Amino acid sequence: MRPISGTVDWESLRTRARELTERAYAPYSHFPVGAAALVDDGRVVTGCNVENAAYGVALCAECGLISDLVASGGGRLVAFTCANALGERLMPCGRCRQLLWEHGGADLLVDTPLGVLSMAEVLPQAFGAADIEQVRGKEH
Image 1 (tube, rainbow, N blue to C red):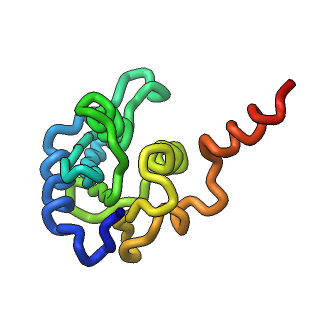
Image 2: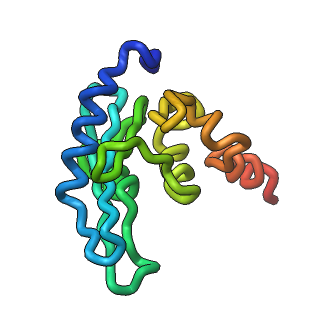
Image 3: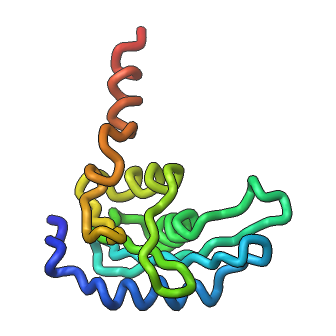
């Protein structure tokens, strides 16, 4: 069962996200981002952005967080936040919203500048594994 928003230690997650901005590699944009999330087994996973001189291959903080999740044993994300160097909450980009959907689903709680929202509110009508399975099941 996923925790309700009131049972998540949001301040602790926000602190971890802010701390991760200090580890970001952002020599081109000078816009460090840190991310932290609570996993369904109680672990906290983190990530920071890693830029590259070939801009298109830069990694968002959420990418690092998902890698940390998978590398540390997997599970489902239940609460997520990301921050800039000023500690302000950021919305994940579209690509990262899709990554978060894959590993947290509709009920994932996302700490947004407007408050905590479910992933279903952040990414309505999301594309996911069920869409693939629906088509796969109809193939001959």
